[in-house]
Length: 139
Image (cartoon, rainbow, N blue to C red; front, top):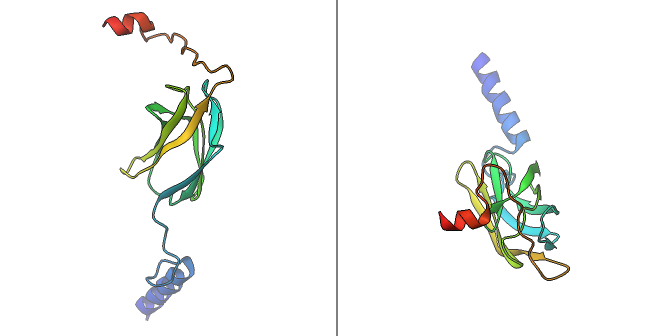
């Protein structure tokens, strides 16, 4: 009789949590639908919302704008990730890619547009531990 109660309880919990097949509550496949805002300053530092579905349960993630990774990446919930943009590689459109630890990748080609008030891209300042830009080109 104990086994019956446990299996009945499991069935009730499965139905309540949407885990049983055919319940219509199965998790959505991961997807990236929108980026808001669509553009920001080439110096970086813009807080951006990545909207979609299926963001939870894939492990840690990295969000790339071109080849540079975003900072302050937060999975708010299954449908929203917030990030702070990195400095631009170039002015204009940049690919956005979300890479999860489990290998899941989502992307929006040319999904974010880097802009500059004066139309120029400022150089990234020297960082300790990295060679200055002129030495990096030689080596």
